[in-house]
Amino acid sequence: MFANHNFLKDPPFSNLDLVSCRNVLIYLDRVAKDRVINTFHFALNPGGFLLLGSSESIDPVSGLFFL
Ligand SMILES: C[S@@+](CC[C@H](N)C(=O)[O-])C[C@H]1O[C@@H](n2cnc3c(N)ncnc32)[C@H](O)[C@@H]1O
Image (tube, rainbow, N blue to C red; front, side, top):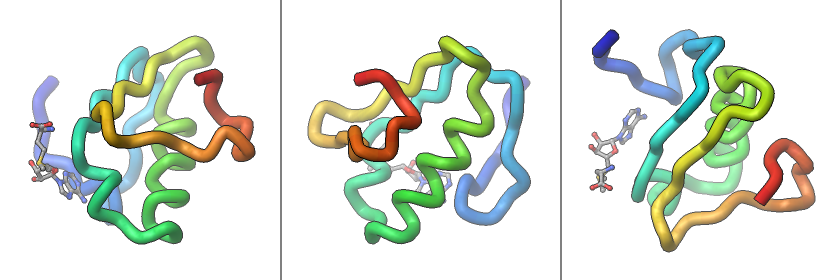
């Protein structure tokens, strides 16, 4: 399925095995970034993968993802 999707405004997808979001989080402030990371965590199945750009990272303290 292909769809336009604004991850800051639209209802999140669910039951995904992979979210690829390269070179976007670097442009967000901390609050927006945390919200998006939580949205991605919700959207992914257990064991799913979040693919980020090489300059991006998520806070390991959140405990939401294994790095
Ligand atoms: C710097 S480009 C990176 C494009 C590609 N992922 C790459 O690594 O070459 C940032 C992309 O994020 C998209 N984007 C920005 N804000 C977004 C949002 N809230 N929801 C969905 N996509 C967004 C833009 O449309 C743009 O395509």
